[in-house]
Length: 120
Ligand code: AMP
Ligand code: ZN
Image (cartoon, rainbow, N blue to C red):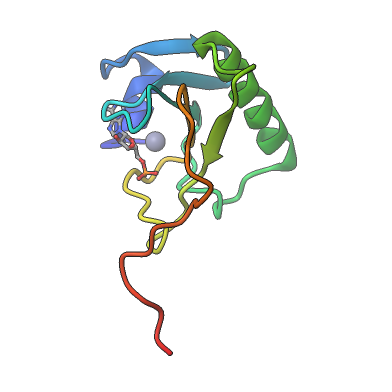
């Protein structure tokens, strides 16, 4: 898709530190890491988010791509957190489906930081 930075990375026209890739997925380091290990896994094909028309097969293979990326990044044994921000309230900022893989240090148990309180 034109004007999509992650499509550009998948096509090799945008720079990225590639972790590994196969014919359907690309994994690369996040440009603003929030943990010692912070990689992203994307399908080469453009889907806007998890809420797009994503097949079971793609989801399954994407999970395997995540475990493969964790192995290559050296956190498969120590553990890692997987996040898929989806839509406005999750703060999704790049509209090409991507999975965050965070690890390399102990994380707190809390997974959610609300920026606004829900209405009573
Ligand atoms: P999200 O908020 O879930 O949409 O996350 C988007 C992520 O993409 C953020 O963590 C950004 O730091 C990361 N990001 C944006 N542009 C690039 C890029 N060109 N290369 C690598 N990571 C990027
Ligand atoms: Zn895209």
